[in-house]
Length: 92
Ligand SMILES: [Zn+2]
Image 1 (cartoon, rainbow, N blue to C red):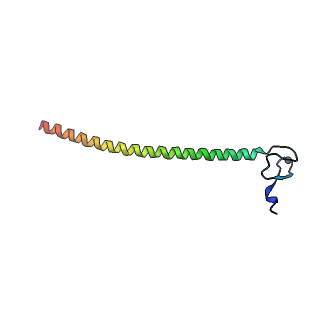
Image 2: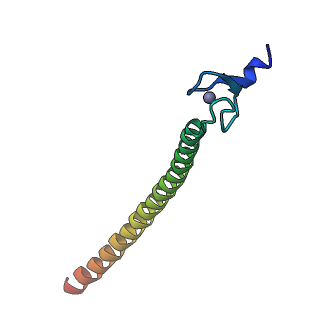
Image 3: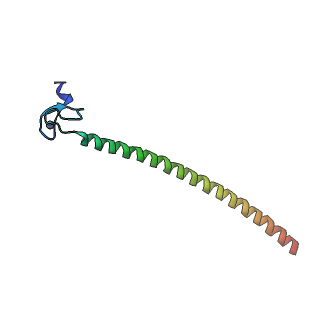
């Protein structure tokens, strides 16, 4: 029955209540626990997304940093070689 799909048993009194019910109409208990867990899971997924974004940004920056570092080291090495070359030329 399609109607039964929208129903669930109250965890407190086991009466059939609406699946989306926030409060049981039979015993008056609030059924926020499941939605709290869902909210926590959603929040965790959100944090995971933020963490992933930060990590990818961090790794992107790190890659950029190493690229620039390698580039400048190469330039420095070239400059050093040029300097050494001029010094050796001066002393020969
Ligand atoms: Zn109930």
